[in-house]
Length: 400
Image (tube, one colour):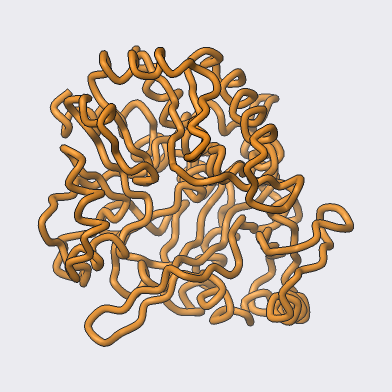
């Protein structure tokens, strides 16, 4: 949460912390990635940790874990914040389990003293392919854990082309604290039954580099902008307003809805999206704190989004933790097919698409009975993403 101090990352972590706490577990959050954090106020990666420490402290106070967190500054500093170094070592000495969320920490000696070490992979494909290629970094990273979980819930299925070598992966998904995703006033879905209220939205990074992967002569891309551009004509094909809240490298000027990207390709992309009728919002601005991010989802009609090419073509079964929040908020989700329909129910509240015709059909279905699809979305969250259910299964598979 400190390295990438944005609401999407924070909500992902907070759901785990709160879910485990509500189940009666004594939970500590310890961030030790070995990398300097990004500071959105300075718009740079920095060794000045003031923003990072204040941010984590504020989040931990919000969820009632004021004295249950620590942050390691990268070497050579090695300074700790929150819990003292001696308290941190004590936590590892008595811990029943360590959960390495997103696999962001290379485990060290103090971590290896914990008997159950759980690796949770929120982005499949790249690690599996690198292991299959014999990449020792990934082999060492994964070998340090006793149990491995992935959001790629379709791994191992006949229609999934991701190699599985050396390690067995239990399927898992984002746990969600359901009562966090209702409005501060009682949530009445009928109040949102009019298509004139809000837009279909999503919150996403636009262009990301450095994570493409080659496998069996094919290149599988990471950046979502490739997929968004395939459906650039969508706003002209549906009645509902469509808005993309995008994270781009920018100077952060001009408030929430207008900002100046630093990259000429991004300038051209924004012009292209706008010219096709897509509204745009600044994801960086609304992601600086968790509550504006949540409010943005709660004020949306639903979500329209895409997935990474890696997950789409290789059919990992990956499902977005952000889309799980839309479902929990009772907002229908129309998202690109990754094979998750083998696990989650689709066609009511949740729609998987491959083609433009699939998207149009999904919007027509939602428009025909918006209230029904809102209720169906919430029901999917209650059955499949409830934190207590997801985490109980994770702990059971880990022998806890």
